[in-house]
Image (cartoon, rainbow, N blue to C red; front, side):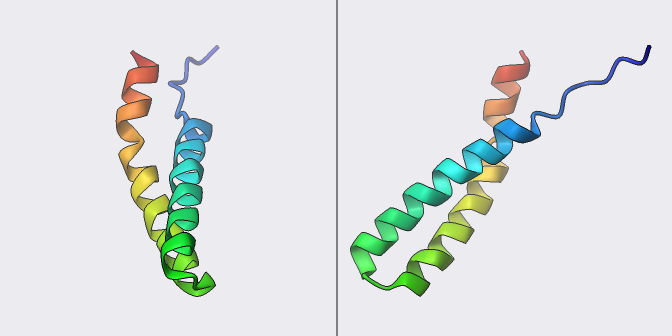
Length: 61
């Protein structure tokens, strides 16, 4: 039986999704432009995915 270390991919995606949705709503409220809000959501989701390393480190400890 091989022992694999978990990757926490689902946790990373949930963090990215939460940050992306919050960014989308905030950008939509501020700019009233769908395209601007969509770009902001994608950028912030990428940042949220990268920043989720701290959450994963906490979860794996």
